[in-house]
Image 1: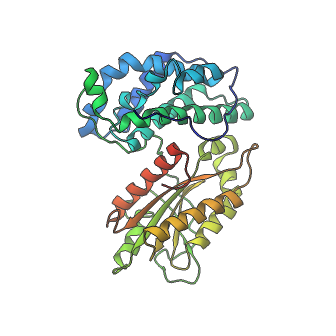
Image 2: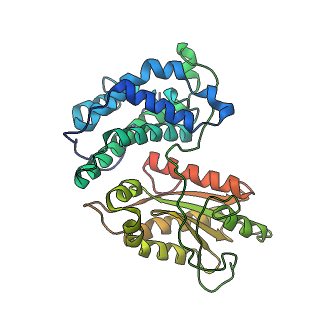
Length: 345
């Protein structure tokens, strides 16, 4: 039998004085978030009936855990409600570890909106910190169940086939950033290239990566997705413009790590794509480790917490040969790294 372990790291303190959203309202919002993140052809994979029966109880427990360590302990392995916590992935329709992470992230996003208070920046920080910890433990409890798809069918509660959705319900449309160099195709330039990200299919990171792939010959190409774990909460507290200014040294250091042929693509403050030609899998993972160390060294401390990043790695041709597949694979790695409490996946 697989046993989930509590999420690593410190345990943020319970937060008092939060709103008390109705469990059924949270469950309904979770369902809508999952449906929004699911392709139309896969919509039947969301187990609506099962979620309607069991999700209100789970959502109520998660809300309680925000303000009580005793309630959180009930969700952990060996706790009175551990079995229900382990079904979070099943309730979201997840068939694999990455989809479990995305499903719990959808619940976290819903609760972040329901519990958020705009009057007190310190309280907003503490709320997000505690919520991330509670949801990390919920993810850890759900991951073992995701590896045994027969569990729900054996109990007769499985609604049917499910898909490994990895759309990442918390992935919001990226904001365009400033263009740092006029020639994003100049991969042989003496300085690292930083280009802007926008929503066009032919733009960065797909465009930048596609141009590198087109000229790679037989060389491998690595793509890293680098995302600060606390970027959303920091952006909400400080504002996106201020956060971008404070992270400028981090961005410059990441661009330098890519080397003269590298391309750094800022997506949002605290989230970057790094295209690194001539890097095989081992070299790409070494680069990711150096990116993680760079973030730890250069990221300023915020509200008493040193920032860290979760990094996903994809390498052509091992993980795909077209830009879309590599972006998809690297993005999955970010979710997986965060769920497992490791810097690189």
